[in-house]
Image 1 (cartoon, helix red, strand yellow):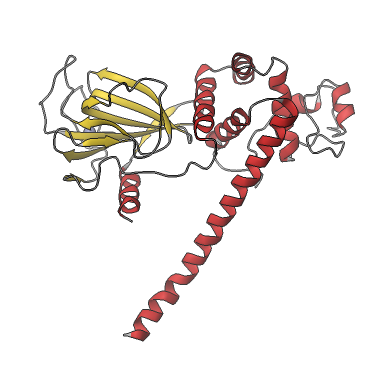
Image 2 (cartoon, protein in one colour):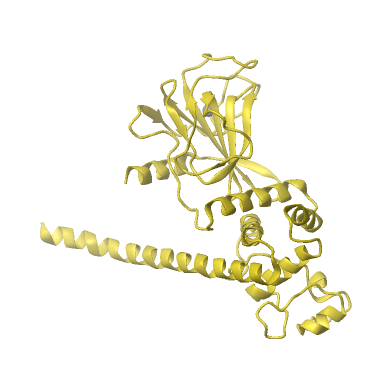
Length: 319
Ligand SMILES: [Zn+2]
């Protein structure tokens, strides 16, 4: 018996050790990033949470990291070096001469787009052209991205960081309190009867009327109200640019409104059977929470199957 236990422990050891190392690296990265955001704020007066939000946004829309830099922000070469700087000389004064926007953030005389501090300083100076107020930053972001939804998303992420005073916001929760009766299975892609030939984009968690529904991630409430298909529903966007959709609710938490910041575990409403008709329609199907997840890459938005996430959050909530 002792022998058997030992074998199991040894078999799992490498997995646990590598996981611990990965988690430690991630924690150190977060501390290092935060220090860079704070330093850049001290030098430029651009609030750290905006710099952190722009960086997180850029990280979110990247297909894969092209390097292991902590700062994901990138600038087009001609913008960084200046139009006539064809040899891409990194000397900061030379770049300035050619009207490049590249800045020397770490004080080595060079503006190197591969250097995290230089990149961050460049973004901060880009914003500084307009100023340091919220309105100034909004205009600067608009000039940089030229797409309203990008600007809005960055502002939302900044608001979340500002509210909690940290960039370490990886917690999650299962949307239904575990002590309540509930059941769910993978229902992704099932046909559904209402609204034409749409497939089912989400997971249905069946529970009794009035069962509390909780936020699953740190996020901003983007939508609260009625939708013909979803009934009373709530949409929350998290810092990873994932949109969490809670539908067929019985009601909302008192006072819940667009722009509210939530954290995992906050009760936002309760389970119902609303939807599939004009406002107030209810009871056309058994009460359940329809949970949907959508991803945005800065250009388009698409649904993905939330089932495995729900399974993981449920397991973590149990521990
Ligand atoms: Zn559903």
